Amino acid sequence: MKPFTLALVGLLAACSRVASPVAPPSLPIQPADLTATVHLIDVGQGAATLLEFPCGAMLVDTGGETNHGFDSEKALEQYLEAFFARRVDLARTLDLLVLSHPHLDHTRNVEWVVENFTVKNVVTDGGGRGSGGKQQAWLETWARAHARLEIVMASDIPAGGKTSPTIDPIACLPVDPKVSVLWGGLAERPEGWPARAFANHNNHSVVVRVDFGQASFILNGDLEETGIDALLEKHRGTRALDADVWQVGHHGSYNATTAPLLEALSPRIALIPMGPPDRWAKWTAWQFGHPRKKAVDRLLGAVTDTRAPVNALVGTAVETFELARIDRAIYATGWDGHVVVKATPSATYTVTTAHPVRATTGIPMP
Image 1 (cartoon, rainbow, N blue to C red):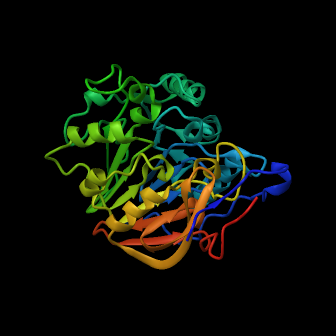
Image 2: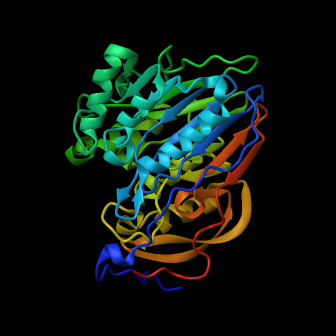
Image 3: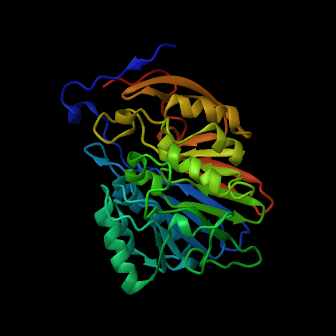
């Protein structure tokens, strides 16, 4: 099928569909359940991932798309309020809040989160610039006075990963989730890195690994090719990057899903945080062409679990999409809405989505 170019014409506000936040899937999970659950929250083009355990919870990123067609703060508010209404035992407390890097689609709603929930521990990459630098700097200042703060630098992370009481504050019995970091900020440009790659905040992303018994998850932030190569080199000879569930880097961009990384990961399930391609505005999945076909094709060849086949939109260039058949366990908020992955300690996974795939019949046009 030839790609269809989506042209932005006329008045965007009149053309675009205004999206209301979608309620989270109904999950009858009790505090005593011996499960870990990853909630890939639909915040449009951006990322916010809640990890739920029998005795605690952590949130990685608070960003999302906000424009005339969508409000990520409302979407995140609805999801987290519903979550804590179900998990009353957690007393509206996040044991850990991680900002992977200072871009607005990852940091936008951090003040709202801190003002509405108890946050005990904070992890960042220490980056002070970028489109979300103001929000990250605010969080670091707040955490120094009200919580424990750890700024994660890549140079301090040994092969196999790093943990600490701040990075891993959650201790459940009889299965204790293990939280570690595999990458972080860079104070100096590494030898061999182009200046442009070092200046790119995506390559300073905090990469988070979580183990729950035999179940394993990695969240990549927006790490791109230069950072990925360094990540692979740092952990060469270890199994730190071998994980069952991978949150795909950089919203499924062409530059964040490499063949060597997928070989190291050997993922069973892939999760892509991005917006739907039918909101025609700046800073959307439509503008960037996310998720890119190049990345999805690599995932189709690497992800081992399956899903019921669906047709979903993938980008062939900016503002350009085509339908692709997805029969591997690749889920995306832009296709599926909220995605919830429930894992047992024996690494049995159950995936629930908020609604069927958005686009199954054709290419949406503005």
